[in-house]
Image 1 (cartoon, rainbow, N blue to C red):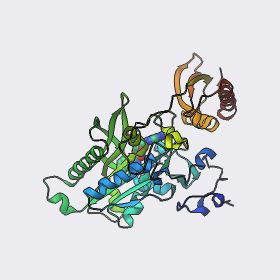
Image 2: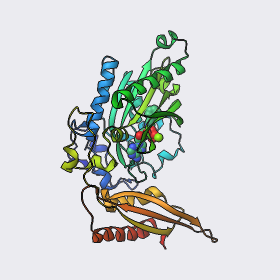
Image 3: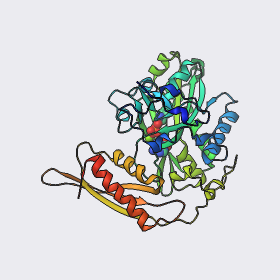
Image 4: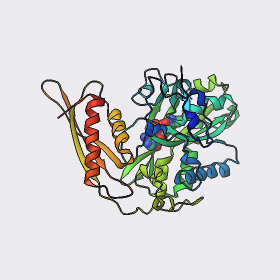
Length: 381
Ligand code: FA5
Ligand code: MG
C-alpha cells in the first residue's frame, strides 16, 4: 500500500513519475526541508546565477562544437538505485549508497546524488554528445561550500575509432587529452584567467579520473570531477567499439567563483538585494554583499555512540535552523580511558539577510540540544 503525495505539489513542469513517489515508506529518509526543494529548478531561471552560468556553458559548447551537444535540464531528480549507482558501476559496498549519504524515497528509489545517473539511459537512447543539468541531493556536512541540494551539469562525449586512430594516441589517452582541453577552454571562456590545477582522483565510472580545482578565497576549491568512461559502461549501452569522456560540474562552486558569491545558501535566497544583482546573459557582474550580519557561535558537546554520524547531526541542525545555520564544525574529539568518545561541535548561526536576536538563537540552540538527545540518542556533557 503506497500513498502518492506529489499530487498536491506544483512541480513546475518536472517530469516526475508521481505514482512512484511515496513518503510513507519506512525507509524514506527525505526530510521536509529537502522534499520542498524538488521542482524548484533554480538552474532553469535565466536571471538566476545558476541559470546564467548554465546558459554561458551552453554557449561555449554550441560555438566550439557547432551545436552538436544535446541538452537536457528537466529530467526527474527521482531515479532508481540502478540508474544512480548500478549503471555507473558503483560497487555494492560503496559509502555513497548508504542511507547516511543518500536520500532514499524507498529501497529502490533515490533522489539522484549526481547527474551521472542519466549517462546510461541517454547512451542507450543513442546520444553521443550531451549535457545534463539538474538538481542533485546529498546528505553532507554544513559550511559555505556544501549544501544538501545543489546543481550539477554532466557532459558526455563519445568518440568513434576513426577519431583517435587518426592521432598518434590510443583511445584512452586521446579522450583524456580532449577532455582536459575542452574543460580548460570552458574555464577560460567563463573566467578569462584564473588559477587552476588538475588533481588525480578515483570514480567508479571513469579511468583515469581527475578533479579540477580553482583558487578561490585563499583556498583550492574543487569544482568538477571527470575522466575517461569505463569501457564496461559503453559496452553495456550499445557502444562497444567506442571510447568516451564524461564530466560533472558543480554549478554552485563555479558560480561562486564567477560572481564572487561567498556563501552557498545565497543561491536559495529570495531577498531582492541578492536577486536584483543578476540579469540574463550577464557574466561579468561581481556580487556586492549586503552588510554582513554578525555570526553567533554555540558549542555542543556529547558522548557519541556507534550509530552517530556527522551527516545525521547536520541534517538535524538544518531541520531546526534552516538557512540560519552557516557552519557545523567539529572542534574537539577525544576518547577517555573507558573508551567513551566525546565530540564538541561549534555551530555558527548567521542570517544572510538580517541580525538575529539572542532569544532567537538561544531558542534554536535549545531545540538542537533537545533533539540531539532524543533523536541521536547521545549523552550531552
Ligand atoms: C560526482 O558527482 C561525479 N558524478 C562527477 C563525475 C561525472 C566524474 C562524470 C566523472 C565523470 P563529486 O562527488 O566530486 O563527483 O561531485 C562533483 C562536483 O559537485 C564537485 O566537484 C563539487 O563541485 C560539487 N559538489 C559536491 N558536493 C557538493 C555539495 N554538498 N554542495 C555543493 N557542491 C557540491
Ligand atoms: Mg569530489
